[in-house]
Image (cartoon, rainbow, N blue to C red; front, side, top):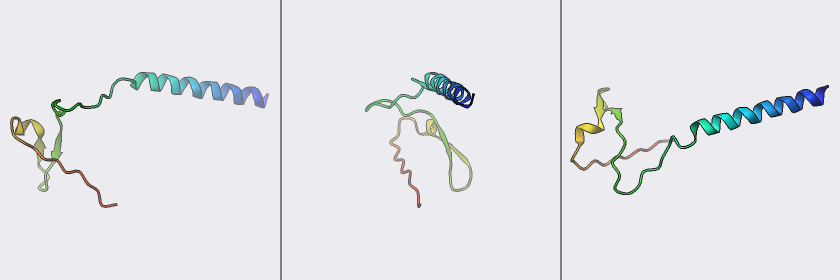
Length: 68
């Protein structure tokens, strides 16, 4: 009985993972050299939203870093 329950649980987990992976497959694509950057916004040091679209046609240097 315990073996059957374990087997059923493993099958359910495997099916769930298969469903999740197939759902998200292909939704994220890597950028290629020369592609436009995806539109996004960030907060500046004053807490105001800054949109990438504001700088269209200008050079933008982004430096993401962490201190950990």
